[in-house]
Image (cartoon, rainbow over all chains, first blue to last red; front, side, top):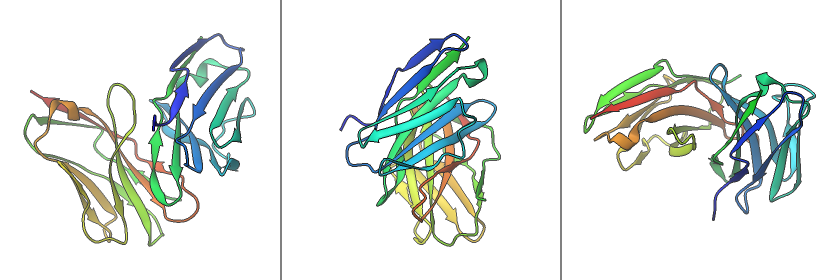
Length: 113
Length: 115
C-alpha cells in the first residue's frame, strides 16, 4: 500500500484566496482525521470522519474551514478565504477501528501571505 | 477531558547511549491505548510503538521499549543504542478504547543525538 497520500506537499497562497487540501486514505481504513500542526498550538484535531460521515468537527476553527469525504478513498479540507494565521502543516491520517493508531500522510505545508 | 503531558521539551543523548523520554497522562478511563510517534525533519509522523492499557507487559520494538505504569499514569519511552537517525521530535499520544478514535497528543520532546 502507498500509505496515506496528501497533496499538495507545499502550498503558498495569498490572503483571501481559496485553498483546497487533498487526502487519499489507506484502502480499507474506515476513519480519517485532519490535524493542524503549529509551533504555538502543537497538533490539533480539526475533524474526524468515520465511514465517510463527519463525527466530530468541534476542532474546525471557524466557518472558513470545511471538510468533505465524498467516498472512502478521498477527502478534502478547504479554507475560504484563507488568512495568514492559517499558515501551518496540515496532516491527514487514517486508521482502522480494529487497530488503534493512525497512519499519517506526509502533510501539506500551507503558507498564506 | 484527557490530557497528555511531556515535561521535557528537549533532550540530548550521545550516540550508542540510552535515553528515556517521559510522558504522563490524565484519564478516567480504565481501558485505552498509548502511543509514541516520531517526527523527523522530513515532518512525516511515524508510529514507533503502541501499548494497550489492559496489557501489563511493556511493549518493545527493537531498540525502543516503554515503561508503562498504569497506576501512576506514566508512559516513558526508552531508546537503546541511540543512532543519529533517532534524532527527531517525539510525541506521546493517548487514545480511548471506544468508538471515538481521536488521538490526544503531548507537546513533544525534541531529541538530539550527538556523534
